[in-house]
Length: 205
Image (cartoon, rainbow, N blue to C red; front, side, top):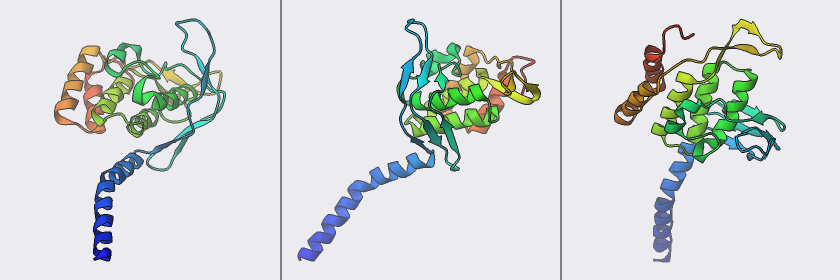
């Protein structure tokens, strides 16, 4: 009888832990962060957002690729278009603040293709606890109005690929896409095609 009770208690405990374990597995599917975001402000002015990283920080994406930001890197949230803060919130606030640190750095050094950097931001947002629909809305904002660059345009003085003009997705189009996301949960590829269709003429693809 004692052995039966023990097995019953073990089974009950296992069932109670199952949602937690499933949640951990789901979080790992989107990657994980390594380290913590420790920063110092570089200017006491109230409108300054420049911060220096005091420790190395990294994101390991679902493929195992490490997106490391070195100690001493300067970040300011500029990679998140200000026009869309009403949709996604300001940088370094809420569940996507860690993702924005990684995204900010790679938009500055431009050592990876812009599309890979933006997609990394989506996965890092999910890993940080952002709901999928919200992460997709944020992805639309940076895909449709965030930084882009290309090695084909040559290098700047620092040897980085030159920036392309930012795409110009209107806030009205972004709101329409937001409603579509909430209603139908389209894939990233579907979102990219929709944004490309709605971008202002002449936007580099």
